[in-house]
Image (cartoon, rainbow, N blue to C red; front, side, top):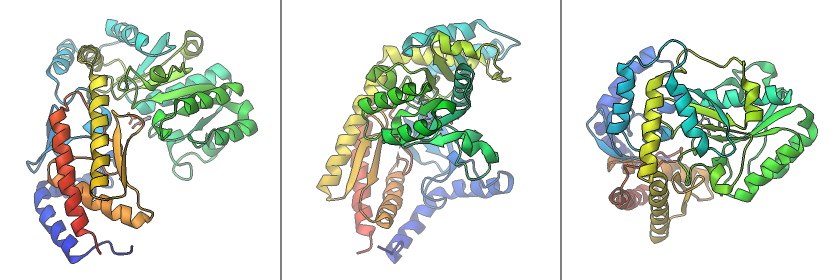
Length: 422
Ligand SMILES: Cc1ncc(COP(=O)(O)O)c(C=O)c1O
């Protein structure tokens, strides 16, 4: 299917462009002062003309854009809002710390209190170090693994952040990095075995984000850890997305796996920046005296926000809530695809609290066009579903939001099918 546009599609695009005029004006200003116009994660959902780019307020599960349109948000700041936007008790806890100075010289009692509070939730963890971002936590985990094993190389299988070792290794990163950062396919244990058979004596760690194993198979994750240990390397579970979000607390906990190190971030502090690497005392001791500290790591506002977030999430059973609503959304979308005779699939990536939906025709061009049309029709009806990134259910989503979203998806998909070239 070659056709990517038709008069009917262009007419619809012209109408949609009216909705996002302020967004587009901001982009034009941004292009003069921000390289490329936006940071990568701020890229347009579909394009800058027919989808919103700039938002100004969020409350609960809803956000509004600068043009005054409101959406039920299923991106939730790329998963950083576990409870929903602007949760009052979390802000209050953070602001109270802010009134006491937010970031002080040297150490603060909250640093200890935070680690003590979180360790019992992380399988096999006796010690932890805290950071601001997931990229920092995964980078620190690998540095700790190098110190512990005395080896230098690492093996990875997906996205772990923006630091040099996480990028495609062909450009921008130091030339020799590709020799020390090896890649396997998370769904193919043999690919890991091959790498470790060849390079095993140099490999300090294998790092895995559980959403890379699709469909989710606990036994496969256990198998990857077994192969890793067979070769004397540490197994790092990168639960930056899933940690403290997935029922009962992390993928590791769910599948009864004790990793050597675990990284956690997005579900910690409801929008305040915080990340953690944790592990057994014997492994984490290697981090003593290692330099990974940074000026803002000790910020206590995020820590107070984290303690409040976790207290609320436990009391309100937020993780169960997210999984249940996510599973309902997945089932509803699959029913809808069947009803409208569309080749598409909704699934948890890896589990219900992180749903996603994609078209599954054999021709990539057909899937691309359907994706472009469908997701912007959903946006035009007030539902923000990301076309390329998995979604996040939060504590503020309600069953009514899910049913409304399914109705919106029915209408968006019907319009999409009507716009598709014959
Ligand atoms: C699995 C995983 N690891 C690491 C990161 C990097 O986290 P951050 O964006 O906070 O640096 C991400 C971010 O999306 C992630 O999903």
